[in-house]
Image (cartoon, rainbow, N blue to C red; front, side, top):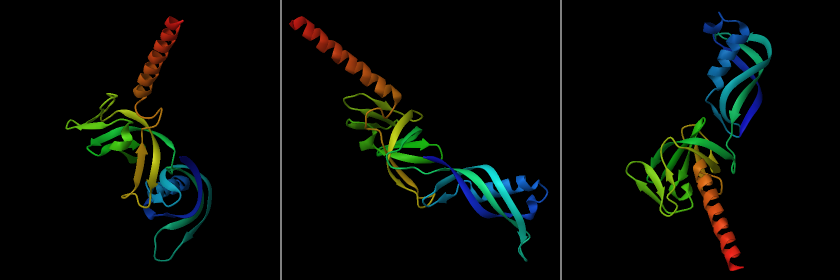
Length: 195
């Protein structure tokens, strides 16, 4: 889930940023300190949004920087269990599909890719044995988060499933609708002939 988070922090503005306008200098310092940082229970800091307030600057002897008590807003992303996400298949391996969902990648284990026995080909394609559904690199898919561990950015793990109704490639839902419509039409025709 994406959040607009308000933060109050003392921002260190190094001397190299003194030539800029104060607000611009603090914005650059915030971006350097926060963007791409993973914070426990808050999520991944994605982007600076705005500054609400800048307090008086404080100089600490021995450090050439100025510290400003600042209230500012950042965009964060904190994946939550059962959240629906959309992403692009980045890589397919014999154990599943890695899906890029904005700032981070998740794994749909081969058992969670589709409700079918899945074959992996050496060309990097996953195919359903009975359904004939195909998943390739660069496909856009919808998935559900089933596990998230975000203790550190290098070890962040997100588990995904695409087995549920409406998940996976959009074409898969369309195929299912057509098959259901054909079955319904056959039942209706069969009932009409039986009368």
